[in-house]
Length: 112
Length: 179
Image 1 (spheres, each protein chain N blue to C red):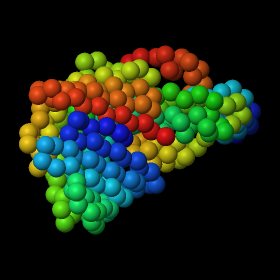
Image 2 (cartoon, rainbow over the protein chains, first blue to last red):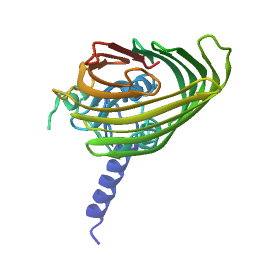
Image 3 (cartoon, rainbow over the protein chains, first blue to last red):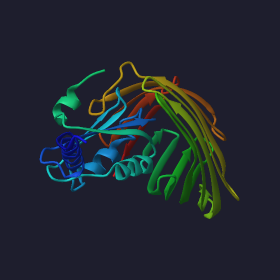
């Protein structure tokens, strides 16, 4: 058996797992896609709620891309479940939650 | 929501205590050449069904109210209210139908509205939203009981304003704010 290869693979797996689960040192950007969000007057509550959330530093609603975009504070995290629960409570249908290290301002500025 | 026309004024203040229910105050005044009617009461509204589609939303609401009503010159008497609304909107098209019935010993009024509108541009979340809407309104018991009202709807942030004028020249204004 080739021990160095196996150990390297285990090490790589442990590193990847730790990186994925630890609270990140850099601010993560969360994109939640939402169905039914066609009216900004009706979606005001989403922004108001997430703006007050202790793990969130920035919020943006993009009606064209049907996205709620959140910037998490460094070292803090908001769960996918909490995001989808609140979007559903606001009267909309959450579809998918994605996270990336791409800066909030870039995600916000991106267009289809 | 506060507003109305020269012949009907409306005040509503609701608290949405769940995503599908709201409870609050509702007052109306009907004014025409024959008599003036007043209603004031508590109302409960239910969102019966919502369709969240990728590019549209549709809703069906139902409400009931209980309060007091009077015809000018008479005393207040117990009154009931029934409300139904269905709407469908995209970011460019808006349609709605609603009817409201108020009844008491002396007062019997029905308000039915059908609206169709379009947005000249797709406003983003932080921009001013503009809608051009044609509203047909029938108020039972009025001398001119059918009104055709072109109106402009503007909203930004938590503020909503509608201004219009019937083809007979009667102005309309509605204002709403989300707290």
